[in-house]
Length: 230
Image (cartoon, rainbow, N blue to C red; front, side, top):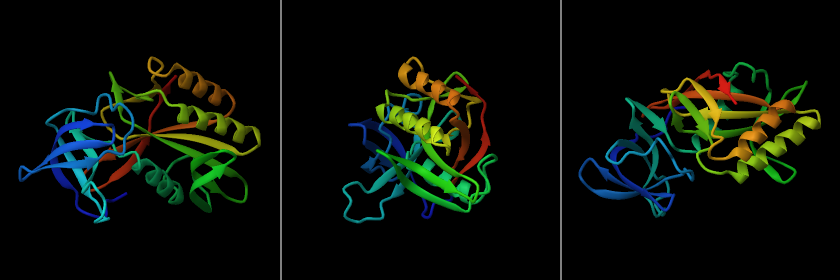
């Protein structure tokens, strides 16, 4: 995925009220940028660190920029939670993920019962529902999810289990937007209910794809599937 407009460099001042961020542009101006990430953003917040912003396309929007990434540990970390859905939908469409190839129809934001899942794919042989989560938290050399208690994430796992029981394919894709980790795992110390539900989902046949993404100001690409420890 390539950014369709040039990103704007800035420096992080602080994040507050979850969705707002004060940043300093290169000319010294302080502006408010929108933060799409509703989590705690543990291990991807550092005051004074370089960040990249995308200009808002809607001139009427209250915030002029969206915060896309932060530079820490000698690499860029993607924090925009809207990006992974697009990445996975494009990758499935283009047959770029081993194990998720061969689909002739790919759609985004598809409803199943009382849930809305991120990607739906099908071919003449099967129907596949895919839920996508953004992962940024780093503990030692692992990427862990979630970084805050997620009742919505728990609901999605329960939905995927029901989908699998109805004879369709159910997949969880975790997009890890940082390259300084070597495996994926659940943050059982933060949300033990989610960790338990994911283990149960795997037993029930839900597939897990932890996909590592390389982030840069030019674009973001999925590069490989990481091993996972649950």
